[in-house]
Image (cartoon, rainbow, N blue to C red; front, top):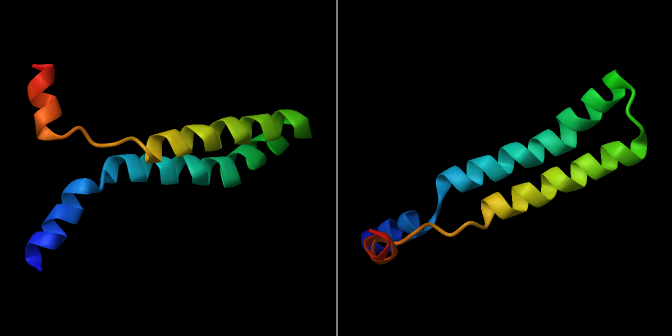
Length: 74
């Protein structure tokens, strides 16, 4: 049972998840607030939100490089 937890922990890329969550939070809260503050149009605000959400998705789906792949890169 403990080895199953260790294997799962190795598969989770915590940094990528944190980056993805941060970008998602930014696109939902900060971008609209800053856009309103600076007087940006709704279409530009929407485009910024979409771009940040796509970056969030890419960041969260990055696979961690395994040891064998790191060995090949050297």
